[in-house]
Image 1 (cartoon, rainbow, N blue to C red):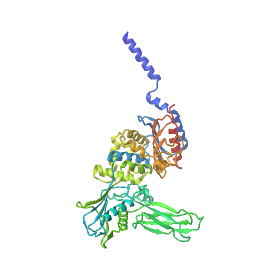
Image 2 (image 1 turned 90 degrees about the vertical axis):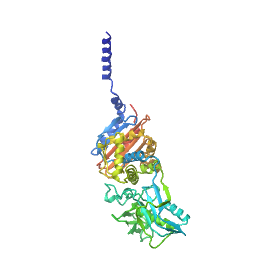
Image 3 (image 1 turned 120 degrees about the vertical axis):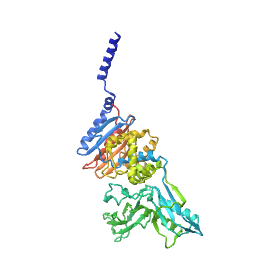
Image 4 (image 1 turned 60 degrees about the horizontal axis):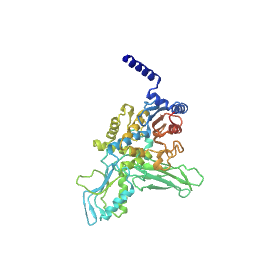
Length: 489
């Protein structure tokens, strides 16, 4: 009799299971309105476009919407979500880059007998004012004359200056700047290895007036521009000639116009840093003997440190890195990871560290294929499933707060809040509720991040698109807005 009752309950349990949806089906159906909205957008606006979309619950990683979730698509700068995570995990939030001024000589009666070494370890945030400060310290210590050479030591990283996949036409601009362990940024956006070139109207019929920030003799200006009467079209173009440090300025600039400003990548960032450093020394009255040269070399073991400067900690660097999608930061961090973990400041070692971090948190490396850390290469491929899984996993990391703070916030008008999303999704419900990394290359647009729904639930999403006829950015924003506007049925 007891056996019969047990059997009856087991049978009823089976019937209950038969008529009740499984947890995964329940979760999916609870977001059926969102699923319908996203399907409608994808079908109407992304037809003929290569697309991979995944939306997950941040709490447990459960997928609530997907479209080609395991398809490898070029992520562009969405790849930086992995670079940032691996850097924070490998280097730590408090990691700082060190720059030193050293000598192998002695100061006597105002003359430094020996070489002056400027040694870098990859700091992308060095500014001219730092070099001015170095020069002031030396002058205050009584250095009035240098008898030896100024030597730039960039041996912390290898000598490869450009990552794979950089197109020839991009090499002139800041977003494809060369990477060196000793480099300089023109302002607090910290676009290392670039100089700001500004051309403004002068007198009608004459060349535009050109200024460099910071001033440097490493680049040579070829000014073919012309100032034209007010009302004419501004056709100014500023480019560095491929393989040289010649900056060619062409076109017309109307009187009364703002002219044009470009951030131009220099060829040989080490020489650029040394040139500006020498100018800072000269400005503080430090003279050089006729035989003094500016050289690239390695600091000898017996050199003593005169001045040491540490950069901002990595937790602060995450703001300009991710908010402004700074490519040089990504590549500097990759080489730094390789140097710290394997003693090799190379892309090979750095990308190895990134892959190892991805594997350590359970990501499938078969769905990751990348040859840089910034996302500049069109050969990079990753699936939206993997990107969302990464973002879900990092929420358990002790540095997650720093990571999240670095990502652009939709509609945040301040550049260091909204970043690359400051002019996108500027109204409710997306404004302030979508926090995500953008990605843009030729015929590639992506958006990967977090969205808080109307119910207050945090969802993780990644939308990857490529091979489209017209820009998909408005569509990405519509989809992100739909996610933020969703609620459980």
